[in-house]
Every structure is written in structure tokens, then in C-alpha cells.
Image 1 (cartoon, helix red, strand yellow):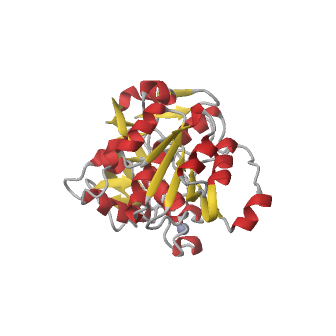
Image 2: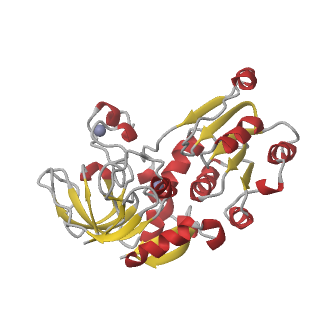
Image 3: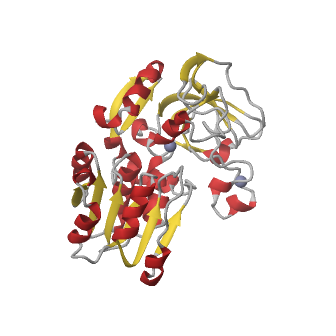
Length: 345
Ligand SMILES: [Zn+2]
Ligand SMILES: [Zn+2]
């Protein structure tokens, strides 16, 4: 079979690899029908994630059809359509029992990280019963690819950790796929205003279509003053950091109102300067984390009912065979006006 592999910093290739095999009775082999590329994959390619070994197949998002199941798998059979969670979970360890699936003793973020991932014709999913979700017949599978990672991440680590509530003013700093996922799911909770900040005018225009009430183009300078001016100088109830660099975290620290929340979603590769000397007296909560994907079944219902349409995040479509070209487009997202790319087998 073919697979997209990491060959060390800056190097990737679409190569022939052996078919994955059942290794444990709880494994499921899935034939990939649709997958995508995540910003995290670009981080790996830059060499930011040293735990990824050379020749690892990348990818932690996708949908497919069950090919074979191990002897202990109870919930799936060959031919079933499945959504792959970016988080592998056994369902029975101490952390799984409190829905902290991201820290499963025999799971967590494995796919495209510690084991071969979804940017391939076939993938082995450990603990298939817990790490896959059944797809109801007639579902929009492209839309559901957004539920492997970005929608649950935006919701759980941005919106829920930030305790977005009715009437709140929310600022989302970073209008990439994760920021957009936070924008879509924040609207479940009826905030009064959602301010989107980014350096990319195209993404800000898209954010308005997706429900942002205000946009701030950071490239025009003075982002902090302009966001504070939008709130009459008070600041925002919830500041969602959706980039993962010190400058955007710093914006969040400067725009949060007294009693507010900073929800960090971005993946940071370097330390940030934490201004406790200003924040302590303001009664600020700061949260961060890795998605648990415990909200995925709920999100599937909201997609089924038409409450949200995450397929709107898809800007480009490629055949899986053309994944090298898809990486070129996604890697130049601003120039290509790309949000999410879908690869179909
Ligand atoms: Zn991802
Ligand atoms: Zn577990």
C-alpha cells in the first residue's frame, strides 16, 4: 500500500509500505476513504515533534471502512463505515474512566505520532472499540473528517475549557482551522460577540461568514488596543489562543477582562512570558490541554441535524495519490487561501 511518511525535518515522501496487520485482538484495520492534513503534521515536518520517528506514516484524522477486526473487537465488523478519533483510548484505564482519553495508559495521541497514521491506504487502529465511531448511513463523510480532531479540539480545549456562556464576549486569536472550529462550536453557547483576530484578510472574511461578529486584522498593528476598544476598554470574557506562539498568547493576556478566561488551544514549541503580576489581581483562569474527543459523539449529532456544517471548512480536494501536492498547498495556506484539504481514496 501507499503511505505518506516523515523522513526527517523538512522531508516527506509518498512511498510503498507493507499493509498494516492485526497485532493485538483489540486492533481494527481500516481502509481509508478520506483523510486530511493538520497543522500538527506541518509542525512534525519542521522537526518540532522529536518523538516522531523517521519513516513514520503521518496523519491522525480520517474516515474509512473496516477491513479486518481482531478477535476481541465487539462493536465493529468488516464493511462498517467508521470515523477515526485522533486520540486512541482503551476505555478501561484510570484516565479513560474519567474521560481523560488523551492520557490513556495505552493510548492518547498515537496515530501519526508514535504509530503509523491515517495518510495511507490502510491504517491499524489500536483499541478499535473505543477509538472509532460508527458513521450513520447517509452521512456527509467529508464533514465528519473535521470531527477526528479539529472540531472536538476547538470545542473542548477552546469553548468548554474557556466556559463560553450566553452573552459573553469571546475573542479567538488565530483564524486557522482550529480557530474556525472554536468559532463554529462557540455558537452552541450563544455568546453576544465573537471577535476573530488574524493576519490573513481572507481568513477574516471567511470568519465573518462563519459567525464572527467582529474581525481584527493583526497585520494592521495595535491588535490589543483595537480589541479592547471593541469592548469599550473592558476586555473580553474569553480569550481563545489558537496559534501557539508567544505573541498570540501575549495578546490573550492583554485583552482578557477581570474574571475572564484564557483558553490556550495552540501547540507551543517555545516558552511564553506569563504576566502573573497583572493577571493575579484580575481573577483570571488559564486553561490548556490535549483534546480528549469525549465530545465527538455529541458533535456527530450536531452535524447530522444540520446544526453545524463543518464541511464549510474544506477549501481544497485532492485524490489521496496527490497528497504530496496537497501538502504543498496546505503548507502555503495564506497564498492558496486554504483551510482544510480533503484527500479521497
Ligand atoms: Zn490534527
Ligand atoms: Zn485508557
